[in-house]
Image 1 (tube, rainbow, N blue to C red):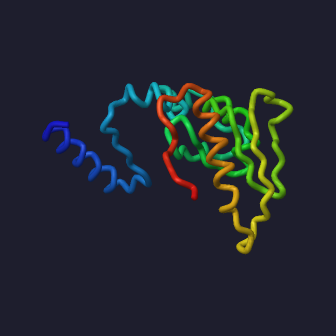
Image 2 (spheres, one colour):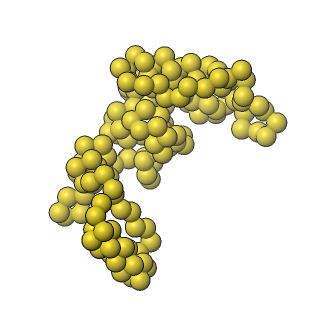
Length: 154
């Protein structure tokens, strides 16, 4: 980014903050990158989303590793429209009360369900290796170029 572009970006940021814009984001990688990678966030000229938005959840789940791992709530796991929009193929369900909501309507989804009570005294660290292995194996099967993480769980 050249100095003139940086100056103009900072001036725009200052003007938007003065107008009390609640959120301001700038891209250093260009608009084409977002069109390719995140079309579900883009709006058309009528301010309508160009891709389907979550039907049940109020927002998209959090992308932890680009196009590989997302973190969400039960509403995200239940939202078939969002699952399809993001191209999610595997779900890890760590709960003692949350069903595998889409196992019948989306037979191509693969679930790993681990039953854990949501209590402070219930450790989940003994499940980390199984979770890691599930992610590693299924990431390799989808042809990902690199592993999600290279960690030693011992």
